[in-house]
Image 1: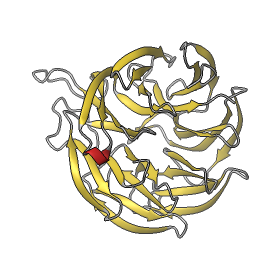
Image 2: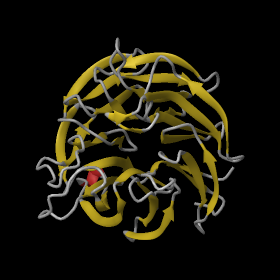
Image 3: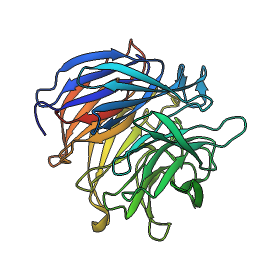
Image 4: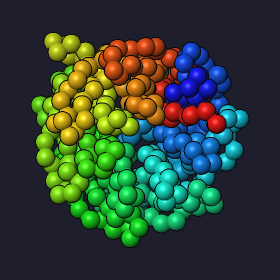
Length: 344
């Protein structure tokens, strides 16, 4: 980590991306974006930042229309340099860059005539290369294996995780998971971690809430890491730690439920999967942790809390919060996508 590095944070209802310095955490600049931005992905080869524009307002299954753009942002000049139009595709969400093969992937929701899919884009021409159906209506988060051959998509509505062959564009497998949210892969590609079930906002946590661990060699679930509540984001650090963002609701004796009734959430920190992924600790963060990322050296985690419209900075070795960064959102739910950007 360097004091010249910085952090980019999306405000989905702002709509904007805010840049913060790393080290002494302070706001540097705020850039307006089309409505409604969700996720970020940094391209180090071109020093560009990609941002998915998912809905016109609202969120999954409760929105005023699905968008179809990816904004391209110069993080050094901190300005939008291009907007990629994905029409007729819509609702791009997750973003993954395969740096070795120089392909940018994004997930899109189903259309009237085709299921949800991953789109492969050329970062040079910014054109769609191919569409890879995933046999599910609403793939949001997804992860790509280190060799770039396969992707695993978390599907909110479908009762399975889809496994696809990226070059051929073929569905290879369906791994039974009863609705899923965040997903990520271990740095060595041996395990995929999936938050299940699909998040709801009832006061009582579902009994089957947990993190499913998939063995990629056998394409089967080998264990489930139990959690106290519903988790949305899942992130693996460069050191192999597994981080998940868990919602906490109003007290159990309260009848309160629904979006907006969450209290401060928790960052769960698990050890490397080759040591059976034991829970190392839980760190309190803001309301409704929705996105998690980490520094390149794996020492610091960043948790975007959408209802608090803030980012909690967490010291991972010490398992303690370091700072809270406020993200402007015009009084609406805000902080979502994150990207760590090393100095030029």
